[in-house]
Image (cartoon, rainbow, N blue to C red):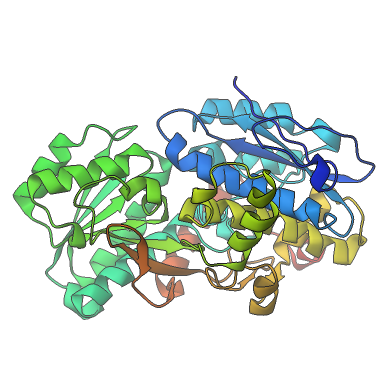
Length: 441
């Protein structure tokens, strides 16, 4: 299995490219395994995401670590394949003093690791992706879709379409096609969009696209025949650019296509003729070329030859997502230190408490240089997702323009789905919900 390793160990002089393998011993270091995918059909999406992760960890170490505890990390290449993700988990979970938390970067891998993480008492952190019902912290003690889930993405996506149509009431009688990646990721959209269709009276057609998404001829023939008012794109990697090209070849207007965050990166639209007018609703960070954190990366890493990838990607949506994901993993540990010992290495169980009691307000996000592209985050024992916010962006041919205010997932839509799915999980697995005493532990 191909692997890229990076264990950060000292200050700037020791920080080098993420594609090499620095490894200098530290008395105090917090280990964060990274399940990345820099190869395969999804590499154009996975590479900037991984680079954002690594660059954030480098910045943390430049500033002295997490209250003096340096960050260590090691990448393991999954190729976005579930079996390889499980192999990486098993190989990395006990290294370097033990894994603090795993971020799977894949919904399929999340499904495979949810029970393993719980059994091993290692948190699984999936900001804005993963298993949507894991937002119920009374059932999923070790899982954290902080800041959003795929269900939240689907809900805000429909809200944005409604804004474009003139209001939710204007969706009645409309025809909407859900074009989705036929994987655990894409299938997460179906229950929410189906629920919204019943609520608002629009006609929903769902069309799955097989991995990796390059063969969409039959799907677009169906779309051309039905002429839906809107197409909701739930693509990943090459599926997104292929969909935009097929839309152009069949004459479907790109300004009637609305994607989600995995379908709204620069790699999806750059070089695609006629992509102008296409929009995507991005949960958590969108592009942030002018954000404080991007400027910091350019000055302190790329300016000194230590950036993890091309400096042109710094600020792109998927790169910003990597920064944000790494930030959440670090700030959970920082929060845990407030309870268990500032400047100490946190165990996975202690870090879990930090992720469950996370509080990042606007002032803190501003200090981190990321407040302009995301909203405050907070979690509780009951709610492992917390508030969820998204914004729409529209491609103008050269860059993404913000095209909506902040959109917030509707609890009235999500909570019934969440309760049904979580209760079913409890029944199927013969579990009991956590007690108040357990929540305080």
